[in-house]
Image (cartoon, rainbow, N blue to C red; front, side):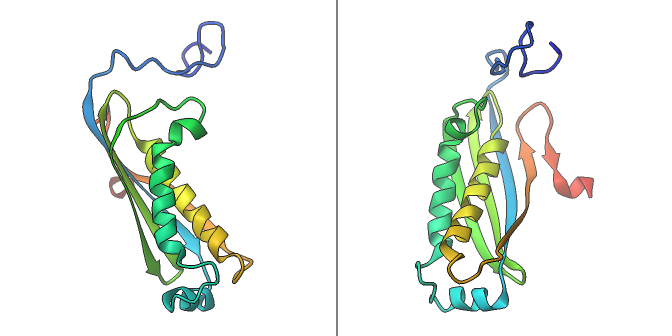
Length: 158
């Protein structure tokens, strides 16, 4: 198993050594969906949710989560983020979430962007569960990444 990056020569779990990687500007964008009924969307658009406005709280929760990713995902490196941002928008299906993470470093920020989207979605779920019991969270995925060994853009793979 030594060819796997998170195993050492004795097949023990290890953090990947990135000390030989080049320091570059790295950026990742992730997205996800919170599936809500038209009734719940109406409540949110009228700012009548019993727990307050979940969209702005979700944005802040997502940004905080991006900054704490290495505390949540065991083998992630601690990264000094240059930027973490989360946007939330009403959509026909519910709420569309997008997160962007940027750093200048030796490893990418995909996990930070994905963690931001996930926690933002969970925050919306938590704040809306009193008005809708069957909320869905779906399609959490990496949209793009740049600055590492290989760039990725989901649109070019569709």
